[in-house]
Image (tube, rainbow, N blue to C red):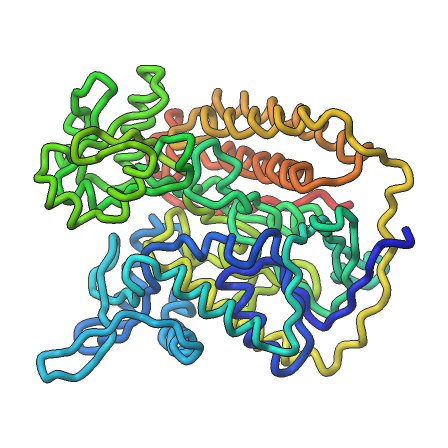
Length: 534
């Protein structure tokens, strides 16, 4: 194709969140870097992270070993201790790097009038060790990193580009990545990029579920591309669900903080009766996974679209003072939380598994790296502890940068890649097929592979996903690519990986709960899936 543009760079980074931008900034003084963003730079999950970043700054009362033990406990026996220790040990220096970039973490004065970082505490942590910027840490991190990369002369930003597939040299002694094909959404054309190194920083895959707290871009692209290229994935069955996301067509992906339950809000059935006391003596204050399972059970039992979170019995001024953002957001769609209950559903929130890497972010394919939520490092185990996710992004971005820079001088210049061939495809005249398949996939993943699973549900989902995968493959082979088609192709691949991983785990542990195997096994191991050789 004569109009297919070809880009050449030293390192191409797919994804523009905390992991991708941190890697770009760590490399750009030494080589040319290109960053691919599927939408605007502000669209990824980092921007929506409300909590903070965990690191031991208070050495008098806290320790790295305590951070390690808390993470291991939250991970329900499946964390890799070495990965946890590596992350916790490197946390402080990586946070200092973020501070040097200009991230405005909250400060306070100690009893002697000396300024220090304000440290907060979140679920699973035994000490105050969370640096934060009010309740919008992700926004502060993302905005700061964006301003830095936009000002750097050796970082090329390619916004509104979909990564399609990695280009692998299979003639080499071992598979090595040479670049990738990308879809320019503005020009509606496929382009190619040659690079010495490729890094996946594409985030998670929570868009595979009907209800999710994630932005639309979280469609598992990096996981699916790495799998197709020949990389192993691990622990894809562990999907974290937030119990209370607003159920409203005009305000999707909006979380209702757990702090509301902490201040006395009640979860109710559509008839107004409470149900949490039936499930746990702690009622609404039970841990996140228990609350999410209880809501899921009631919705399935009653055939209800949602349940309700009610704090209207509290004083109006108290509600507005404690939850101003939620009050304003709900009021914007005509919902007054001081007078009426909030419709809520659990929402897919975080992908704990992903592409297997070592502690430098290296995958099974030479010169291909994966960092952040797309990767499986062993840090999260069967459940992610609060405020370890942004930390993982920064720590492993720095580790990958160090490894890349140790090799880049000896690496030959990027070579050409095969041209994209669309000589045998046509424009689609049936976009409704994509829309229908997208909805069907997310619906049966929610119903059969959600918070509570069973072997029968999983087998039913696997049959559906195999049919969908075949249909989407035929569609992809015959029609020109589009944003929705590319995302659907990746989502159906990730859905299959989640289902197969869930079927392999014959126990209930952490975020994976199955009715057929409710007990813990004595010798838990990560679930590792390996692609068939091409």
